Structures are given as C-alpha cells and as structure tokens.
Image (cartoon, rainbow, N blue to C red; front, side, top):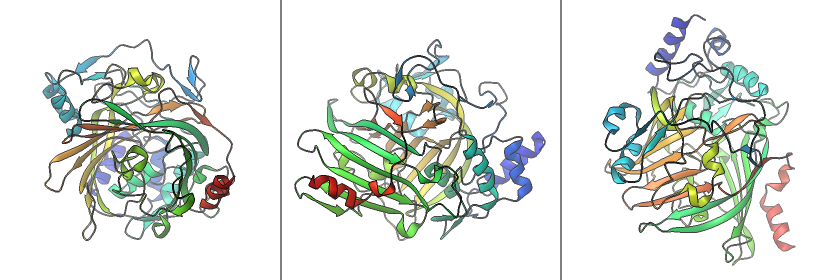
Length: 450
C-alpha cells in the first residue's frame, strides 16, 4: 500500500471514531499490516520532524546488565533528557500534554516535572501475535453492543480499529506472556505527604489467549486469570483473591476471595468497576488498576483520534530503582521517570445512559505501538478534573513485549496518590503455565485448609 493510501485509511478510521462499527475489516485493508502499518496496527513511519522514528521491530534480543527477574533494569542508560517540561514552560508543550499532566505540573510546581528523552519505539511481540493480529483483522468482531467479542484469538483483536470500544479491547487483550509471576506493593500517598504500605502481595497471572496454537475455536474466551496472596502487613497476610476475566460479557468477571477473619472462600462479584480497591486500602477503584481493569459495559467509548503526546515510556530504570528513590511525597520522583514523544490513540469514555460510575467521564491515551494505556484523565459529575493516572511501561525482551503493571492514580482534589502494583525492590518472571484449576475458588479453599 502506498503511503498516501495509509493516511487515507487512518483518516477514515478517525471519521468513524464516534460510531460503533463492529465489523472486521476487508482483506485488502488488512494488507496494510504488512506494509505501512506495523503488525499490530501502528504507523511504521516516523513523524515529519523525526522526533518519532520509524518502527523497525522493537527490542527482541536479551539485554545485558542488571535484571529484576525477567525485567532488564538498564535501558538507554547513557542518554540524557532532551528537555525538561515544568510549570514555567508547559505552555510551550500544551498540545502534547494531557489535562492530568498539566494539573500535576500546576499542583506541584516545585517538585513535579517531565524529563523528556529521545523516542525509542521498542514495542515488540512474538511472531504468533503478529500472525494472529493479521488474522483477527478480518475475523474479529464485537457483539452485544461492543461488550463481547467473537472470532478472535492470540493477538491484537482490532489492529485497524474503527471505534473507541475496539481500541479498549486492544488494551484488554494486549500482548502478554502466557504465564508470569511477580511480587508487588500497593502504596498509599496520604494528603500530608506521608506514605503507607497498603499491602505487599505475590501474584500469578495467566493469559490463555496466548497459549501455543490457540485459535478462536480452541480458546475459551477467558483472557486473563490471576491468583494472589497477601504477604504484608501481618494482619492481612494469607488473604487471597482469584479473578478470571472473559470476552463474554455475560461472565465478564468471576472472582473469589479468601478472608482470614471469615476463614472461608466466598464469591466476590463487587471486585470490579468503581468499587474501592481493598488491596490498596480503598485508595483507588478496581477498574483503575493497570490503567483499566475489567468490564467495559458501563461506558460509551468514543474514538477521538490519534495525536502526538509526551507519555511515560521505556521505564525499566524506574522499575529497577528502589522504593525510596522512586517516589516522593506526592508523586513519583521525576528524575527517575522517563518520558518520550509518541503517537497515541485518544478514547473518551462517558458513562452509559442508565448506568452509574463514580468517575462518569474519562479520557484514555493509548500508545500506538503497544496498545498500552499511558495516561488517564478522570472527571467528576460536574465535569471537573478529579483524577489523573499515569502508567510506567517497561520492556521484557524474553517475551518479547512491553508490559504495564505499576500505575499511579492521583486524586487531585484530595491531594492523595495511590501507587498500584509498585514493582520496585520486587521481581517479575515468565514461568510455565499452570493448570487452570489453580485459578479457582476451590483451589484457594483447599490451600487455606492445609
């Protein structure tokens, strides 16, 4: 496909952004994934001034240097920031900043800034993901008003998206290893600047859509399942949670919880949406974990378009630093966080008629190369900016993929911060898959009885 035809195709996508188009694309349109688009749907070419380079395959080879399990903690360590964005000069970069980022620059002018580094398009995925993304382009469809999927497996479901809901499905079915294990901490930043450890946990995540040889017919539709145990603080140690998420909205989330005080496993249907996240002492909502976590059926999703923005990127170094060096009183240590200029998809979420949510409007910004959420702006019922989220994605060449775990949620009105799944001083490893019976309430109950 010629370059000008690619721009026409992208323009047509943006023109349809406000509609709910749920059909797979024609075969001739899918061919763009082998020419002007990357295998998962980003623009291969760089931007006009060269500040965003061409995508050439990302990072797939093992990196030397220090590792935290499978996470290399040294990435572009010889580079210096190209420039710094502060409250004083933010107007010069306003068109590349989210409203939440602007709010943080204004709220913490003496301590918060953006160190902007050269852009590296490190996003990569296994060949099986590329092959399945190409197949999904012509076979994957949304059903039930966009709340469920059919005909998908093994890769990006909508590499050439036509609607906001398709972009969000691309995030929910983002590239992962079939099975990983890691430990993490949830940290609450209080309004006085102090920090409290909410919990420290060990977790096993499994992603059945990435099993070897998976097909739409062989895949159950469950795209993520996890089981974690709380390690700290002592009075919560031993509590467990199991969750299984599906592309079928009728069984979008199944959850079981083991509580020490009750000494039994119970179903936990409220572990979703805007329920306060008890793993983080209620400092964030469950669907703010990892940028967005769970069912999408409470919102209408509008595809606003694509734009160039400054977003956190290639933050292996941030993940690899210590907890003390990574976080300041009210935000992450800006000297430790790497920002880069990338193209992002912008999606606006508005609570659907007849539904409710504590955050009735949100704007999501998703990196085009990885489909990862980078930033989120959340508004209250009066339209005031209330919450701002930023993620800190990192490269894992052993998959290969860029992963998103640690997310910071700022309550701008209460002057608090929730650090969700902080990986500093922890580990993450790609591991063999477990029997799916491990991710059940019965398995948790059996272990609790021992």
